[in-house]
Length: 165
Image (cartoon, rainbow, N blue to C red; front, side, top):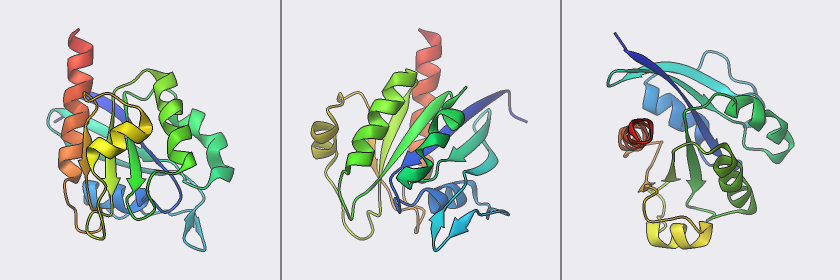
């Protein structure tokens, strides 16, 4: 059984793969999906265990019109994952989301998704988003479950290190 609970929120632009990321990482199909024409219109939520933690894993809707939900989802979060769609590159929404996450002063990692189609170099992602080398940037593919556990483990480690200091 888990010792501690962590709230983790996955943010990303439209079609970055947040719902697939949450489903594949957790090994659970979401029972309720708020979707309209393949656009998530609600937030995703699953519970899963990872290490000694019970993870409450949320994913935000990616469409800009649902950005009003970001603050609600971010309240009380212990860490964040910014999911970037490598097939479109870094978008204005990604820039907005990184600033949003930084305002919450929580540990975060960058997951560059859809690596099975094309990839972005982590150094280029860091440069474009103006983030330090200490922030993990991990190429992933949610559809084939590539590096998803590494993303979560990296975030958990970063959260643990922050809480020790």
